[in-house]
Length: 108
Image (tube, rainbow, N blue to C red; front, side):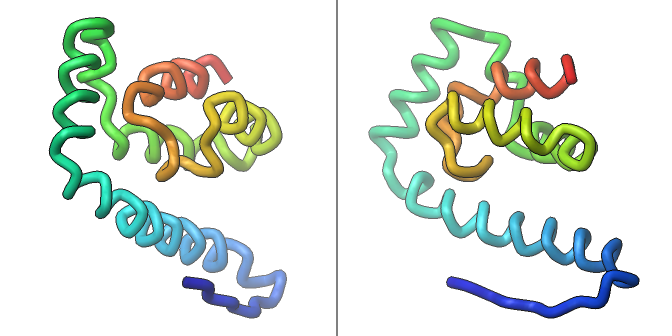
């Protein structure tokens, strides 16, 4: 799905808010197939609980919220970290990487 919108520079704040909403919609759409695959979800949840209990406390929503607050000032660093984690965007990030990415964002 691709949506193209045209904004004046004076509408930059509205553009950013709309971009965030659209990104959340795309993130939800990208996660839908993950929820239907029980074996992958169960395996990831088991691994997460046994290897890094701290990860269970970090949700996608908390990472999204923190990233929104940091992206304007640290866009290049965030893109670089996403590449290190083999994720094109937050929706493509593996659940086991949420805690690491959250920690990275807090250190920015």
